[in-house]
Amino acid sequence: MPLKMDIKINIIVAACSNRGIGLNGELPWKLKKELAHFAFLTKRVEDKNKTNAVIMGRKTWDSIPESRRPLAKRTNIVLSRNSKYLGPEVHICNSLNAAVELLKQPPLCDIVENVWVIGGSSVYEEAMKSNFCDKIYLTNIKKELDCDTFLSEIPNDFKETIDPDVPAAEQEENGICYEYKVYQKINTSL
Image (cartoon, rainbow, N blue to C red; front, top):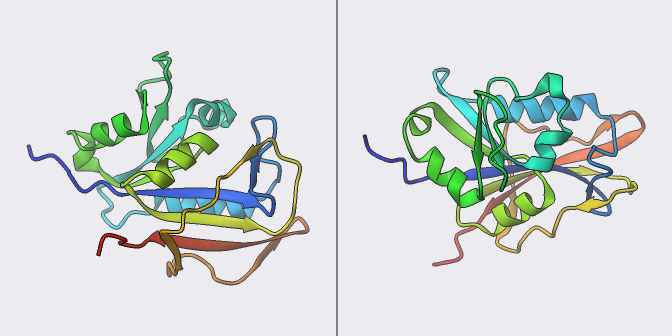
């Protein structure tokens, strides 16, 4: 079978105004509509016979409530140096590159439509710098909150774009205002 060579990954992340993304292994906000947006995007497929993959670090996996693991209707890939068994529906890889290589092989290359990096900070940073990263879906939370984990700056080779499935208007929930931004990597090798 031919290998899928054109893997493109998307990043999906929520960050507050100080670029914070987490506190004590959890999200520092409670935004149900924002979580629904995350679920919608990471499950959205054009081919109903396919699914999406989510790639996350081990700490992000651990931060998901056990009753919600693995994330439903998505192929879950956990990056970890520890090969501890996490269940029949979870793939463990020791690096982002290993995860991309796994996605190029059958059966995943035949069933995965989109690939999403969902955390944590070091996985986001590595993904942003990789040649595989195509888009960054950022929820910009317009409030500074206490955080101990932060998102690195979005590289200059990403420019803001529009996704018709992403609301353009500012959102508000639980007294917190936020907006969705989409950034696409531009071709810098012209």
